[in-house]
Length: 212
Image (tube, helix red, strand yellow):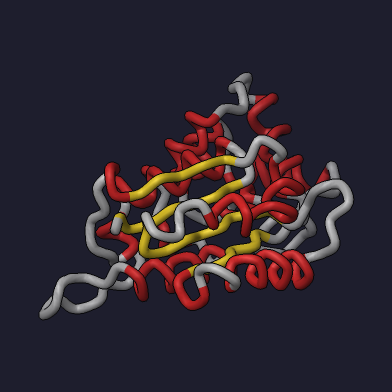
């Protein structure tokens, strides 16, 4: 059986997970995964599609892959909230995958993983931490003295617009490739890392690495 099948909500999630698995496995503290041993899909109906159809979508691959991973955001029109999203998707998966699956729910959305104190974040987005915070506070996207913006997607789009950089999958790939993973303290990212380390531990005799 191949290693892993992943269902995400959009191409940005797909790009981030692929980059992490292929290029940041050492930083994640997992064994290498080859591209022909995992497959990542993005649902054509984005987050609502993942919420409604993840179980049926991934059931096709039950005999082809060892593990199944679902990535989905909380923030979308009609969202029932994090807890219900988590419960419904995991209940769907448990019918086929049982203890071979995991649902990672990002609250509110993927962009929350972007915002950390790592200087690479601001270099890639074409700004500085001070400027981003000031812009976020001005538009009420980032409350003063909090570590992350409350509206990460809106702030990222505004920062990129001011820097005259298009929002693109390439931006997310670059962030996933270059930013220190240790600086990302978002609970959903930690959940992802913990699960990957359980599924794909380092070879016997090697010490499990901390995320770097």
